[in-house]
Length: 310
Length: 310
Image (cartoon, rainbow over all chains, first blue to last red; front, side, top):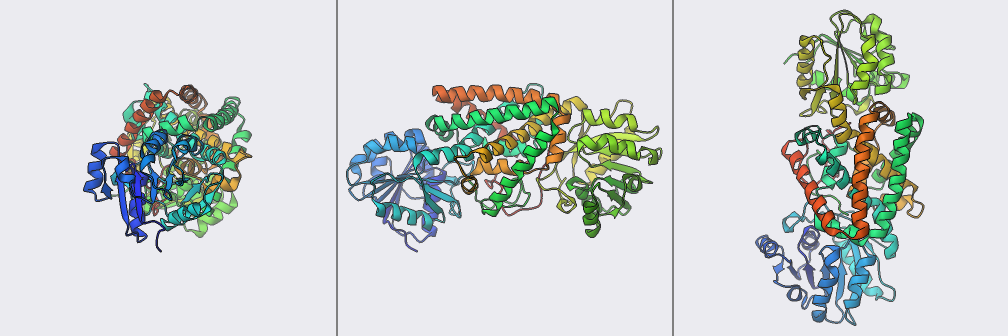
């Protein structure tokens, strides 16, 4: 299968960008892949890995590309778009992989030149690793890549980009940006903040030494630490840029948590049991939907390099 | 290596009990293993699996054993201990695998006959699966089994039981019950309640259909659903019986969560970034301590049947 582009530019060379490069080559892409990163160290590492043609600036990387993908933290998208705008030729598709869509559209949109097709997207895939060495070709296999196309945008540009992501192994779906941001606040952003919080609490516990937390880390906590090991800059930007949806979900979470805390305090075992029984069903649905496996590995299994982010 | 008992009785035939049976046989144990469960269905399943000599009552299972292990939910320990007390011969070791220790000691202690050695223990291992078919011999390998020996108890009985658990593959350590309960509240009980809560919130979200939550379940949420699929009865009993420590940790958690929510609301990116950077270090410690692997599998790897509970 051939991908519908001849020159892909990756702005930012972290986990997602490096995985795009690997997955594109796996799909038989033989065109150019240029890329750049803000830090010289990251650029040098990407060059050592032969990940792509590494350029010193976003402008150099984007020049001449017919697909430019912004793979930087959400908070940096606007500035990068502004910077590369002058080199984008008409007919180019500009996309991004941000975990938040409404804000990215707001920030990037004004900089998109006439004739350039801006197609916001979000591959729901990742791991807690970061940097150009963390990418792998299988990252997007069977994962969703969500599209939030702009009103009045070019349908062919959207169709081509969906074909591109499907070529990388992903399933694609389109929805509006506000809906995306709320769905992700529930399934990703709030859970990440909660995991960060719980790991921070454990770290603070003076009476439980760090060594003990580590030694006795059981299923719940170990999974939380994996989530809480994700890239700090990316996640800071997610929360700052999906503020309303995240705060709404956290408000609901706090309400529910208080209700369960009260059940514990008052000894209402029936309430707890009914609640815990209900949550089992969702898990079953996720396994049935092919988004996880049913085996009880708890992250301790022999690793196949696949996972999810955001 | 030979285990220091000749007849093991397992009261309750769930994940932990069935794993004990498998792990004891793997260790070369050739004595009797008797067992029982409250439900006839579970007993029939255990018999079909040839897990052990299945008895109809706890008394029948415990009679003549020199090691009796209570593998029932924490809330059922006291009643079971009372029931089997009359058949326990002097010199027998009575133990349990409860995730809460102070309350189990309070409930079981009064029923322990003169000359019987009660040695509370807690293997920090498990998966979200339950029932007699869910056990496997490797469950305890390299996991901790914590002991909370009673003051004035027989040191030899404790030493023998530690040798037993080490024979099953576990590492052992002793501490006092209150300390155990606080450490586990941090590393296991609070994280489980939080995961249950977050999955419940997602389930409630009317604007985000169930199908979407399932389809787009990303890393954070998927790990939460795995945790929240754990046995409802076991966890109800954990929370009801480790009430004070769990509520204390949840109180601290809520404080921290509110501080992070405020940072999101006020746009304090530095606070968020510093917090998220700090939590990465704990993760590294857990990998270094051998309690998880560093590979980015997120539970999607080819499963080896190992994991952790509680």
